[in-house]
Image 1 (cartoon, rainbow, N blue to C red):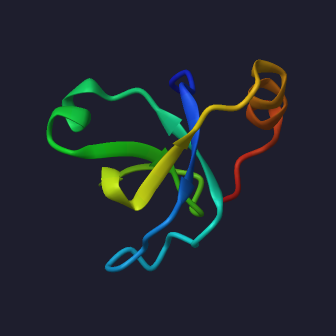
Image 2: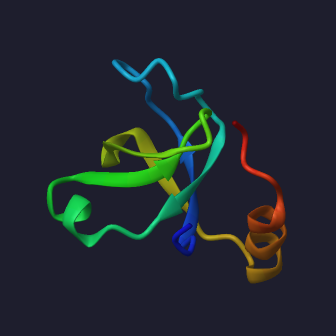
Length: 76
């Protein structure tokens, strides 16, 4: 599994029924996707997929919070 970079919150899910509004998702680094306006997140299936960047807001969480969230099991 790739290293998490941040957590994002879903603010839009039109056309992406597998995303839930106001839910936190772990984001994985993917520079190629970012250049095309997408981000890679681990969704409800427990797998990582590309979604439109505009569906999420990046959260700037304190490091201990990010570490605690990253240590939790991923849904799936």
